[in-house]
Length: 286
Length: 279
Image (cartoon, rainbow over all chains, first blue to last red; front, top):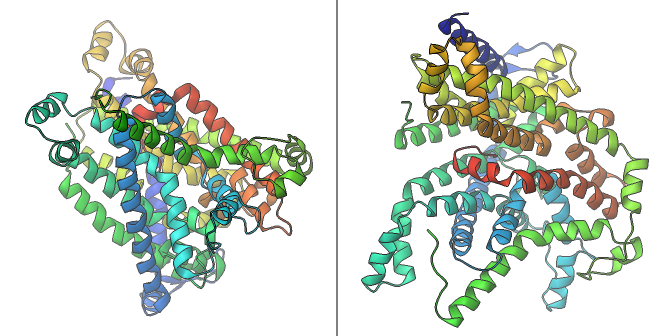
């Protein structure tokens, strides 16, 4: 086989698989959003933009959109602040540093279901270890999921615990790239550690930090499993965001067109975000 | 860049306290999961002692003997292994072709891969479920594997693209001058040298597939075909909460990951730094 033939057959095979697995489902999903379908095997009926009009005219859609932004912003702020803080600590020299670095990654490895079940066990109403600790401190019992505000806070708390290690690890790796001569020079000039962080570390790491924030923003906006497992979108829709709404429409109400329309709208919102991302950070294809 | 020890005693103490807080914050829930899974029933419901014990294995034996857990564990393993193998084969081909040949619009191909990795899960799950239901493959492990590939394939191409890009072209050229075909050079030179990159892709693909809840929840209806995350979550919905068994089941899903991490942490951490990511 000639050199070119090998390359092209690789490319062709690979792209065929990608088209089948990724492009086709997306095209199909977008087209489903223009049909009415009451079951997954039933005959679709063309309704044009009706599904969009129907979903956009319901306040639960706008509530889901706002909840999605609250959840994404809430989780990102805490992940990034905690992650940077952890990375700065783990960048110092202390005995057992490698062990603490290893432990700090573990939450990121766990399946969401394990994290959620363990959290639910720890806050169990009577015998959970966190419930006991809160009681021992003389604080009033926490209703983790009963009120809308508390449920959103709990969902954010669990998500932050799970995904902070991504920021910690990436930021820690990036810290190694800042030349130590910069810090030495700043020390000679009599700056303190806080000034060095804001005037050297942050500006040097701004590009990587922007990438981290945008990637995490997209993923947090898309998260389904952690919210579904913790609250199923409740109480009374307080933690229901677009992914949950789309799932409930398609698989709960068998309104497949409506579910597809919501998924397509999320896709459009993300596309705008990704477009801005590529504008800010063009791909280096050479 | 590693700074020297803080000079003052107060600074050192603050550092140790911060490190301890990070360690406890990150590891305590995991520790508590393992402790709970081995604590005898009476104590489990009354004691919050941080010291393990009194020990029991009954949750594990209940789980393995009385529930679908063992078969669901095998389902998860099957799905993850097939996903890893298929991902590696195809992502190597695409990434190699894209880096080693002047193809117009290759930025588009690579960009599309990164883009695909950010698709909303329901955008993929709704059409896949519909397609599999129509062709009579609803509620099968095949449908779960295909849905996992929609995540792992873009990840693999994206990561290996970066990896091949940094591998000098001269190596294959030398082999080809010595009489190797392009395919021969690829198999004998490129593949062995890209082993670290392949290991990284395998780790992240396994992790994505093994920990997935969303796609398995949507694709699978019957208990017999559930993967462990979905099977375990449905135990919570049943009439009485058996926390011991639930924590034992959680520990068993987490252990393979921790074992692999202990052996392969260098690939994992380098991978994270080089653009391999898990949602």
